[in-house]
Image (cartoon, rainbow, N blue to C red):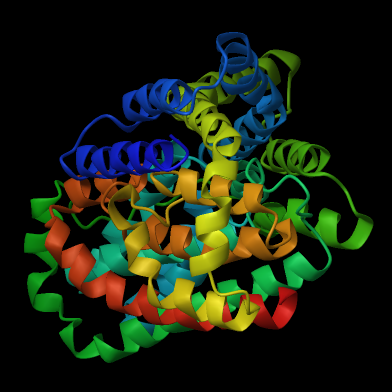
Length: 428
């Protein structure tokens, strides 16, 4: 029985991966897997109710608060006019120097998503920036690839996403050594995106601008956004600065940045106007993340079942896993594409079991394991076709999935290997 149970757990795990690859609903898959691993792992009923379905969901409450505040901040950036104003300032460079403008768009995108989060924020920013990229003569597939990789880069330091993965590694700390690593890894990825644009610069041509814009249902127009004070442009960086300089938690940092954005854009003028703007942005922000929250609830339930079964894999992992931190980091870098399609290295996919089991074995500390698994997960976040905002981008830009994978995965694979070496350097 001691041998049979791990085999059955692995069989269901393989079935879950196949289910995902065939387009199954991931939230349902995680919930069913939580039940199956509780039954197969012979977890007592009362213990399963408490440790698999109750405590993980309840303990995840603080992370949901981070997600809510991050989504609200992203919505305020858009609805207050700050994000469109930053985009408009970028667009003005584009007519004479399209490559410089494209690079600026990459940097602007990364700058915004240092703190903003959520598919709603991505869509709101994307419908502004992607048509600008097309108006520069950039082909649709190249524009989309650069855009989504630019969103993925700042996720290393995005406190909302960090707190999601921290559910697997509760002893990891956002701050100090991790932030130095995060900024470095983000920079590596952004450099790769810029090199990607430079290598494809000869494909930037004005000949296809009108047709590409027509395909996505947009037209060239010189629309003037309402005047926004330049001081407002610092809003996206406020939460990170407050953490690095004063040690603030993300919630007060995001709150300060949100209120600052509302105030400097004139949306606090008049009590009724302020309350209406507040209610509108909050309602949109919560609606943007409703599906994500239920998905994460199912995910942490499965993670709870996986952690309770971790002891069954401890002997196997101790035999097959390299105990040398550098070798393990390089292996994860080389195997990083296994995070695609919510595979075994994607912590918000089948990799939830990998993370839970690795954490449960006690072979490595949380400070090392979190970035170790974050790197391949961000490969999938940046270029995977199961990431919600990437799916939206493919549909909006009328780009085929294979084109995003063909252009994005090789770059992110190379970035992942470099960043895994950085994981060893900072935490090994």
